[in-house]
Length: 310
Image 1 (cartoon, one colour):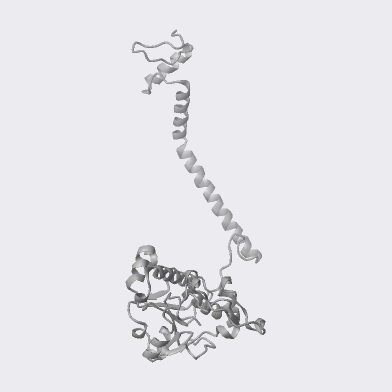
Image 2 (cartoon, one colour):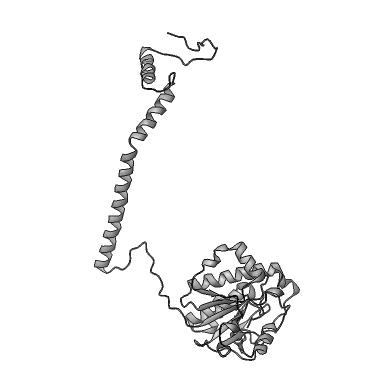
C-alpha cells in the first residue's frame, strides 16, 4: 500500500489509498468508464450528480402535480365563493367600472419650434403622464395628439419607443383644424374672457402642448382668434387661490378635466390635482389676505409652465 504523500514518477502527489476497499472502488469506477484516481469528495459529488439526473423526471412530475393541485384549489375556492355569495376571492381586487367619456381632448403640439430641447423633454414627460392618467381614469376621454413632429417626435422615438403601441389614443401629424371642424373646437387659454362652466360632449377641448415659462404669453389665445375658433379658461380663479403663479403643466390641466368628469365638481377637481407646492387654498379662506405673490424668476427652474393655463 502506498504511503500518504507518496509521489509518482513525474513527481506529482497521488491521493492516498487507505485500504483495499478503496482500491476496489477506484477499480470499479475505471471499469465503468469514469476517471480514475477520484478523491472521496469527487466520487460523492459524482454520485449525487448521477442521482440528480436519474430523478429529473420524478421531480418534473411532482412539480406538475403540485401545480395541478393549486389550480384545483383555486377553482374550488372560487366555486365556494359563488355559492355562498361572498363575492370575489380574497386575492382579487374588484375593478372599477370604467365608462368612457365622449369628451375629446386635443394636445396641440404645434409649438415645437418655440422650445429648447430641455423643455421638449419636459413636455415629453407631460404627454406620457396624460396618456397614463387617461388609461387609469374612471371616465377616460377621447385623447388626440395633433401636429406631432420635429423635436418632440424625435425625443419620443429616442426615449420611449413603445409609444407607437399606445392604445385608445389618436396621433396625427396634421393640425387640429384639419382633423376637427372649427365649430367643435374650444381652446383652453387663461387669456380668454370666457369661463368654462361645464364640459360639452360635442366639443373638443384643446390644450396647448407648450412649456414656455411665460416667455410666450397669450400665444394660444392669439392663435385661437386667428383661426376663428372658440376659446375658454377653466374656472380656476373662482375656487382657488395660490401662492405662486397660476401656470399649470399640460398634464395638470388634462388631469383636472379627468377629475371633473369623475367628481362633477370643479373645486374638488382642482384640489385633487393641484400640486402642494402651488400652495392652493380655497378662495373663501382668503377674504382678508393680500393679493397673489408674483412668481420670481427662479420659478422657471422648477415649474413646467404652459400657456394654456386657466
